[in-house]
Length: 474
Image (cartoon, rainbow, N blue to C red):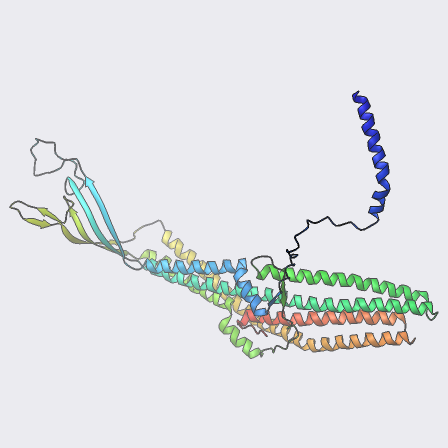
């Protein structure tokens, strides 16, 4: 019985599949039917789609401000500088008197009951002044140590080094943001040029096809035009990819959350003057963070040497105590006859520690500090020489980029005009297809060079800012 049922079900399934096969094939050749939606009451309106948010317009200064807030390396440099300032505060506080309030109770084994005291001794185990001794005193403690003074000065120099390092990180971040910011503008302009070239390639292909149909040109011109059109489409896709990557690179730098809905100001080709070489040299000598860091490192090494030599000097400490140090935990103690004696009093303890012998450890520290001082002096000299060389090199780079920018602009304009004229001549039968292709290629290269030259000048100015501390923004 079960076998018959299975045969019947299999036959029914086969008949259903055969009957529905034509309809399935017909549906495969048509567009998919949308899923049915639940009917809404007549009084309920269709929900309107939310309008897309307007893109955030970001200027270069906005990008710099956002980058400083969201850059992890720059914030790490700021944290290091803040920690160095706290170290300096702690070293300064170590030079000042400290006040503590000490409370303790000392219990000592006394004389057994019924035992007569001998020689007036009130205790058996002599550990303190009485069987029960209570201390509740304020202690003003001051240490006079030359090493602590040197440590305070060294921490001050270390804070200056950390501050200069944070400034170096800030200026490096500026160069990165400027480069990525104007890379978006350049990529956008390249994308627009690629779109025009792709459209021109398609139009030129149609022109060659029309001329071939009229018997005016050979089929080889159509083949060349088609190859050129396909190449322009490929370049268009590459330009779209480059524009997307440029936007993503900047978005990662300036936004705390991933955000692509922004646009940059179109100021890539806005005129920005180049300062004179004398101004750059003057500002660099005054504001260069690398030079400031090297100078602060030399000062820090000098304080290290002084601190190491302070190990040969004695250390004086003074403690002033005021409070209770009595056998009763009370402000007053009753005496015979009904009187009272105040338990409040003061004392001063002065301690002078004179170093005598430590197996040459102090001498080794002095030699170690001297070696570090000699090294940082060499680094300072190198930083000064490097600064002079970088001023010459980076200024020459910016000046060259500025001088070439006008020529690149003119070349891009001429290449675009030449492309249009040669295309018109080809339609009139006065030029060859190779000349048209060459004109399109020349325009693409000239336009790309012009955009890259503008970015190069902006980046060169930002590199000068790393030396002078002055960023010229539109």
